[in-house]
Image 1 (tube, rainbow, N blue to C red):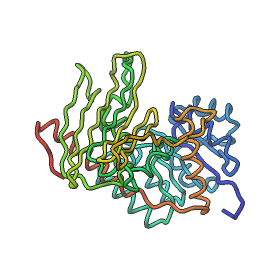
Image 2 (cartoon, rainbow, N blue to C red; image 1 turned 45 degrees about the horizontal axis):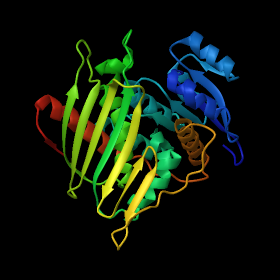
Image 3 (tube, one colour; image 1 turned 120 degrees about the horizontal axis):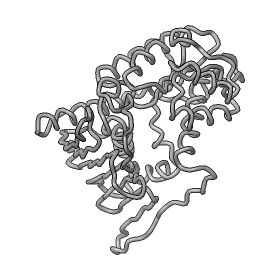
Amino acid sequence: MSEGDKLRVGLLGVGAIAQVVHLPVLSRLDNAELVGVCDTDQPRARAIASRFKIPHVFTSDDDVFKSDLLDAVVICTPSHLHEQQAIAALQGGKHVLVEKPLALTADAVERVLAVAEKTDRTLMVAMNNRYRPDTMALRPFAQHGELGDIFLTRGAWLNKKMRVVRPTWRHRKATAGGGAMMDLGVQTLDLCLWMLDFPEVASVITQMHYPEGMEVEDTAGILLRLKSGAGISLTISWSLVAGGDRHYMRMLGTRGSGAISPLGVFKEVETGQVIDVTPHVREAKENLYTASYREELSHFVAVARGEVSEPLPREQIQIMRVVEAGYQSYHEKREVAL
């Protein structure tokens, strides 16, 4: 693409996440153009294309990967397809953004990264929590030692319990790779490790709950022991019996603490007094979820257009090693060393 041209983007999969954030956000970016969509449900794909005034509806993945009409592909398909689709898109010369997880195993992540490196294409994973205004404001306090030594980080993503009328691909191990831990846990784990600049993990121990008749877990408790001696505790669930969802993270340090949501930062000064140093984050017109995706997709477009740089997401190898160890820990009823 020439300097000043819009990034021509195609979307694989037009399910909920695509309709809620990817399509609305991309359709409003000045430096990107939605050129085509592809989905196994062709009537739905045509309806979506008509709604967003997208000119092309591709009939197969291969047509997307081989198309000269596209510079980039956003992958929003079931998780078991991510590896093969990302590799094919990269080999087709496309820049790629993949909804999490990048692949279902650490070895598979390494295979995708190897292709991205060989093809010299942009590869990003949609870890949108990194792009929330409050998390971006909080991270410098952890990175610059302002909270002292952070000895415990707690993260949780608890979704209000919903009755499953008909299982989807997310409820099948073959297509999702796991349940709540693979769905919500990957994002929450990424956020906690990213806050701490991806420290080395020594071991993992987990407890999970599998509802009767389900192939995958609806709830997981995960404890990571870090090589530094610190710990990370995660609580993940699709089945919170409460009035609404809960999503939070808190870091406890020797000289302070920081948390979302809501955003709060407190520090202990030399006199022993605790002061509130919570940074002011300008209130956005849209919710944090949409704002995070808008920032993330804007960044992806800028990277793909060569305006800014972004390293390959090699930290996703570590993420998936922890996830694999988590499932092993539960099934073998023991702590698993990494």
